[in-house]
Length: 89
Image (cartoon, rainbow, N blue to C red; front, top):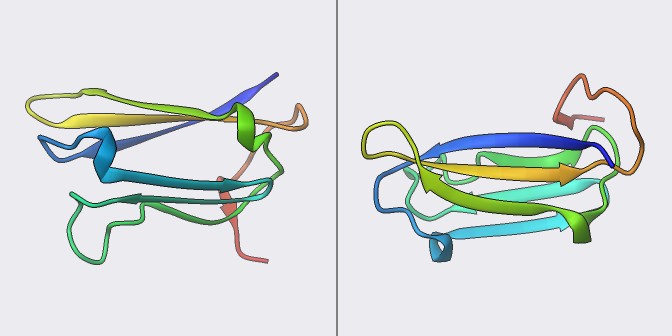
């Protein structure tokens, strides 16, 4: 299937236990405890199109300098181009 890839830059020292990801068919919330207050949910809302939540994966790796990068792969239910990540309808 096709994927949508989301990358989030995280503070140094962020570990997988700092990350909480809730996925449903057309909704996602990513919260990271090491991000500043008020910016702890870089992704929260209704997704542009449905995903196969069980097939989605994420990992954290070292990014530029001492920062870390979280990469989230969302498995699309239908092959189509996403013009947005989340929608407000």
